[in-house]
Every structure is written in C-alpha cells, then in structure tokens.
Length: 74
Image (cartoon, rainbow, N blue to C red):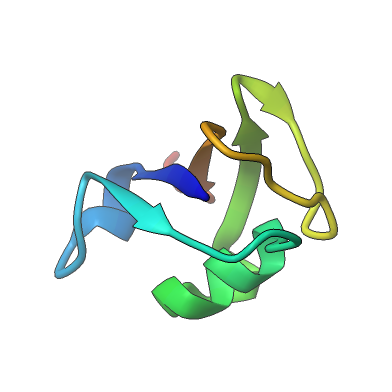
C-alpha cells in the first residue's frame, strides 16, 4: 500500500519534505517514525489525514502522515 509521509520544520533537514512510500499492510505510525529515524522525544504532533493520531495507529492505503517537531522559542 502507498502512504505519503510529510515532515515539517527541523525534521526536513537532511531528509525530505514529502515522499510516497510503499509499506506493507498493518504498518503503524511508529514504524514510519522508526524508518525515518526521527528522535521520539522531539516529536510533538502526529497527524493522519489531518487528524491527531498516536504511534500505534495502523495506516491505510492512501493515508497521509504528517510529523511535526517540538518548537522552541522565547
């Protein structure tokens, strides 16, 4: 199945903005995070099809996973 993975802000450095991936059925958000090698502690928001999702969410064909890092500032 095909899913689109979108990275935002600092997660894009040295990676990609968006890419379509072929993944097996039953793939979870956690598996994608692991495959992209994102630091778990730096992830702030996970969205699947523009709705909040947790790491255990199984993805479906055609889903879009958006991953946002923590934002610092002052």
